[in-house]
Amino acid sequence: MVQTMDKTMDSNGGEGWLWVVVSDKETDRHYLGLYDEEQDVNFIPAFESKEEANDCFLQLPREKGKKYEVQAVHIEELTKDAEKAGFSVAIVNGDGKIVK
Image (cartoon, rainbow, N blue to C red):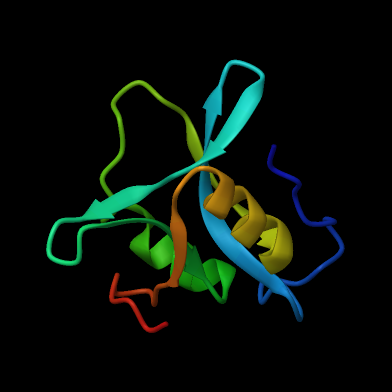
């Protein structure tokens, strides 16, 4: 389950928050996950600001016909959800390069 950030927070998310791409599947929301062939790892790209997420959004591979949006999620929840699904979390910059 994806919990979104309170609308009163600014676009930098605040301490402990990251921005991710979320897809709607009927009433259930899922993080956009990617696979890196070079490192043989599944990961969820996360961004430190909404601007970086929006800058990179169009470069990310997405499934046709699905609705996607950028949302903030607390890092603890994101990490827990990622681990349950067999993914890691990668901090990505606006150019799509992994920084952490």
